[in-house]
Image (cartoon, rainbow, N blue to C red; front, side, top):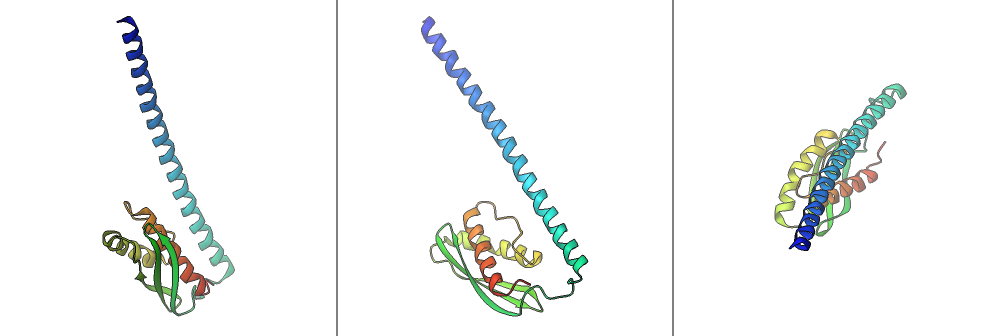
Length: 150
């Protein structure tokens, strides 16, 4: 009976340690995500300041036209078409995402709105569709690289 109690106490201690570690790891993950967000914001501000200083703020960012790009999502290859008008991203359309589930493709509409609003891919991914979101972002980056990111 004494040996059983010792083993039981050891099990309880191990479980407590694991829960403590999970809590610590979750906090560190939130800290890293917050830091990364601050870096993105700082980078955007730096880019804006660089453009302002160099006097290129009125120059179009992209050449007008329609550009296709490819990325890899959760289900495989994703192809998008990015429309650029007056040097700005006007629209993003998913041309092909054959192996993506329809729910994930539907969730990408919110991501596309963010891309158009932000005029680039420095946006947060869609929760619950991270890999698919990253595939769309990579595809848009690929298309914009063809638009001559000025």
